[in-house]
Length: 89
Image (cartoon, rainbow, N blue to C red; front, side, top):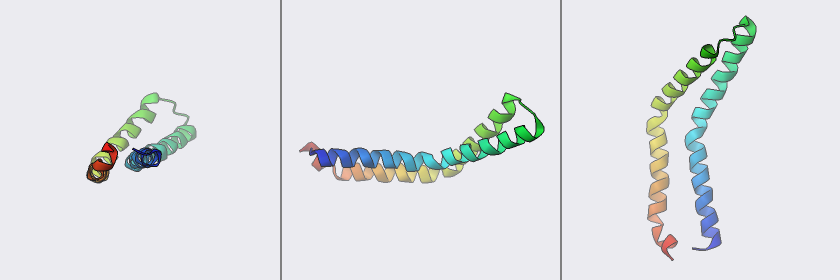
């Protein structure tokens, strides 16, 4: 395996991981900002109020995006296995 192939493989793995997790991170970030703004406006500092909506939104996003995430992960895996002969050299 050449250094360029190793760099390409690691780069592809990191990009696949980024694109698979990015939607959930965006959901958690956006809801976290919204909940914090509500907490600031109402002076409500209950930790449950900030945690439960974020967890529920992440779970809902995960369930809705699961087919897409599996498709992206399987595309990456198929690409790695298709080029497996290059890694054996």
